[in-house]
Image (cartoon, rainbow, N blue to C red; front, side, top):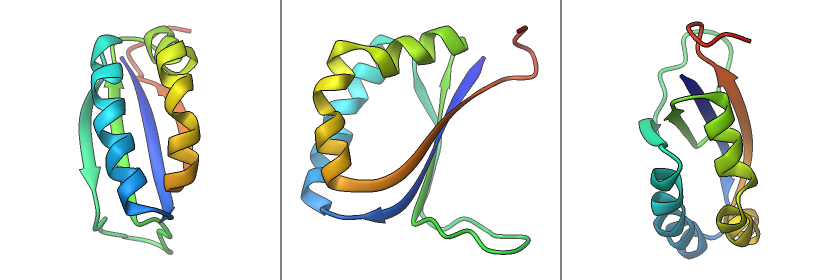
Length: 99
């Protein structure tokens, strides 16, 4: 398994964000992605968490996650994402996935 972690710093345009969410959903699914968590109010246990939303998406492998991110379908909506939110996006392997 692999995970895409999205930490949203700021929603710049709610309407664009809603449109992005609608468009990204079927693209994620077509690459085997599924939401594990979508959290608006994280419980911060140490220091600060300066994000308005945290999203975790699970994929069967890092390769599948990368295929999703590099896909033509996703590339088409990246400008919409950039207009909608300021966010960090990282991919991480599960401990069970080999290098």
